[in-house]
Image: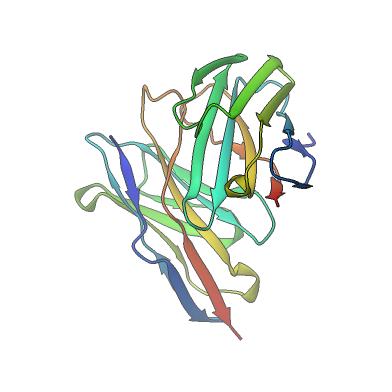
Length: 114
Length: 114
């Protein structure tokens, strides 16, 4: 069965610093990959997704992610973090023939220091 | 579009009572998902529907939980009888049919069972 690993439970960065959140997946073929963000008390909002083509995808709020097949990774990046980016970030995968289900990672809680 | 609508947003009930959570998916979406989120277990898929038909309920924790989707615009998740360990945030999400389509999440219902 497919799985998603987000190795960092908590990350703290200073405002203005760069950010990289890690995501690794386990699946035989290339799945569809997603990053969601959850602000406190809110539902999950899609940041970006990848299914084919250019391995660097752009998303909302200045986020981008790079798919690396050789490393089975889909890391999320932002060049300069804003205090409003403090939230929990979830990586998710969807496999073909899986009935449109998403398998989520355990999430990474981002704290931004002013 | 109003997005996925969930009600109530907050529910406090006593152990043993019946609880019903409601969801209105985005019009035209063929899939509907119910999730539960807790600190201990993260985000768990409970059940999902395709065209109003339950496809996979393997995530439903026990017989006290049941879900229905009588039509394309309404779904319920019922817990009877409720227990303190059911306290969590319950999310509903919907998505179109395509494998590249993301899930759209509602704001969630925070359930507290005392």
